[in-house]
Image (cartoon, rainbow, N blue to C red):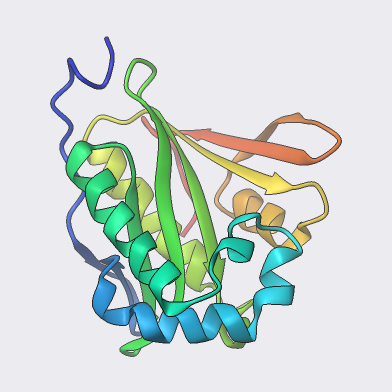
Length: 182
């Protein structure tokens, strides 16, 4: 079965967590705020992520927003923005969807102001539960080999190290019956 044969059911547009955390479908209306955050933290983000080098103008960020809408509609990826008390705090995506195995991969980043405060972990839990409810079986997080913070997030969620290379560590968790930590 390929994605063309499967009628994907997209996750909801918005999820509310505890302590003022919300995860919302990526919207172009936030492009300027996101662009400014990326530019001010570009060096930090590029340490472990490949995409920041492609965001050099507000138009680049707006084009990314357009691309995410197309991916969402096609069931290829779901991009969200993380908010803390109505303030943009980061982004998270569900991508590399494998409809045959019912698995997907997460990608995420958080504003330096919110690092270490549990926002990513809480956001991931909200999305994991939503995807499990839609019949998805496995979540994957691929981290840069040196990105200890991201590896800690995966481990706190109860994910296990599945493989590693010279550049990446890959963690996964089965969603059916998984006791993902809160």
